Image: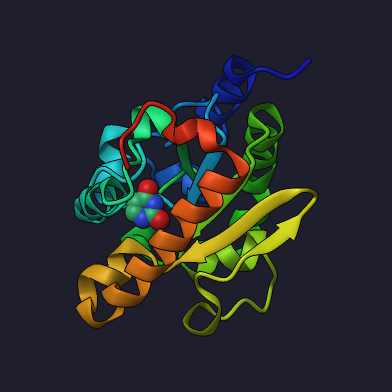
Length: 194
Ligand code: URA
């Protein structure tokens, strides 16, 4: 039987790819592992690497603000992690072999969590989890069903920080996400006035 502790311990000792040589901390994931919603980014940035937690830098703060618009709070309503658990140097995209080395951890996290909804943050996560030819500009906010799990992608919060013109579309995607939550896991909002 797999367990969160077993996966965490393996990640902490992992040297399956070169990112293990330069990391300060493995960024395993945070939030509520019993929640029905999983958010997946691409890989830790500088602050995440230093603090050992996902999405704690400027993009993370922006993400928290965005999600508060639809009354989602990470400690209560979702779990959040990345495709790769160690920081790629200078925040470059994680390479195929690095993703391949790391994806097993995310699969095991997902198997334990059994989320109803997976939200990919950005192109890299969407290409890995939804389909290899995912086009973020065209397909963000669309919904896909894989093995009974509802999946979508939002623009990465760093892209939204860089390009505020994308924000109105993301607001629409968030409204659709709230609707999806209300239909497949309404308990998330139970007791909340929305
Ligand atoms: N960007 C990501 O994709 N993940 C993080 O954890 C931080 C920034």
